[in-house]
Length: 92
Image (cartoon, rainbow, N blue to C red; front, top):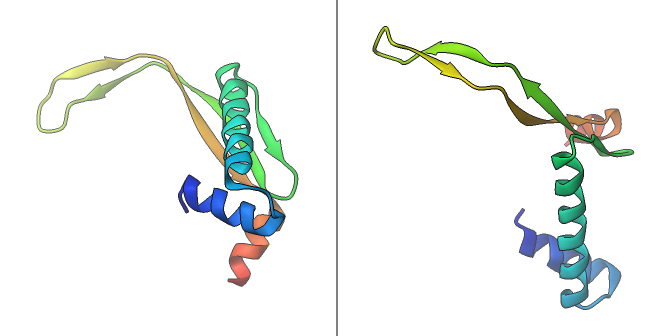
């Protein structure tokens, strides 16, 4: 599902104009992004959690060669679905 499809669906379910729903969705995504930038976990009860994860610096081999390259420390994002969401997906 794309963001535009989400906006349309929420607009239909709530009866709110698409322009207002788009502002709400964009604000929500901005808030989630800001929290993850600040290295804070974002959780939605019954849905799941977005957790920033630190990836340590390490050496890797370039495929097809024997050359080693140092990869710097960086952060990634991990999504952990809730038990309720897992159960819904299993039923489908």
